[in-house]
Figure 1 (tube, chains in turn red, blue):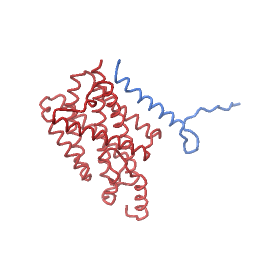
Figure 2: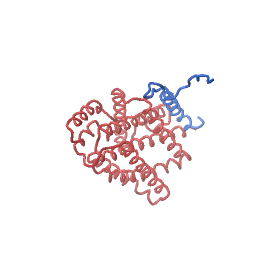
Figure 3: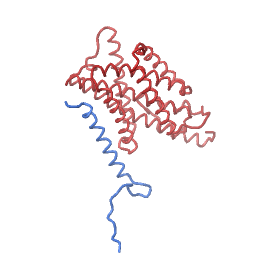
Figure 4: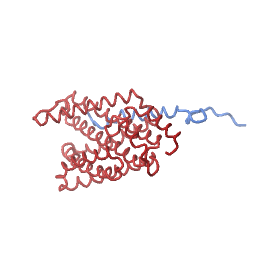
Length: 259
Length: 44
């Protein structure tokens, strides 16, 4: 890190690659740049990020499983949503504390996912295991596609995914605001052909965000980002996976409600 | 619609298949694909 030659090489690499790196708002172009000079204990590694993502996933599964089996926990769903949002904000603005905030985020999101999953399971038995299978199947398939070079995170690809993700986010915010007045955007909740196509589109965009996350993590490793950014990379991947799982759950519910 | 999960897994299977084909065609450090079928020479 101290070598000025390697420093300028790293900055050049960043300038070359870190433009609109991810559609995930947690993984922005300037993220690594801000933390480049703050190296204290080694550099970010791929295996470290994979391990931390694994820890996060295990915490989510344990927390969701515990919530599922304990009705007393169901009252915690709204505090979990708010807590998750606060922890996400802290992680984004203070990634140095990722080793504390990311595991906590995983636990509170697990509470939320446990309750949501249970509600869907009561309505459509068997839907949760299908959604879990499809979420991890998508993760594996896209990881293979990324490693093989079948899907490349080119600038145009990133721009398209970021724009689509932004569009979906705006639509969801408008829908939420309309909800306060007892109204909603029909296509988001409808189980008609348009509703299913919309959900399918959202699932595809959520899945493509995984590619941007892989690219972001690979870039951080390549640039020698600080060790604590492993937690940040894991956090980005967890956010995308949670989103993907919820959208797959919604799509499956729409499809099953037509049977 | 029989099983929606089965239908949704079709694109995943396609992606995996195409990725494996791409990987098989990828050339290794010696300039040759890492997986190939070659005609063996006859031994005496």
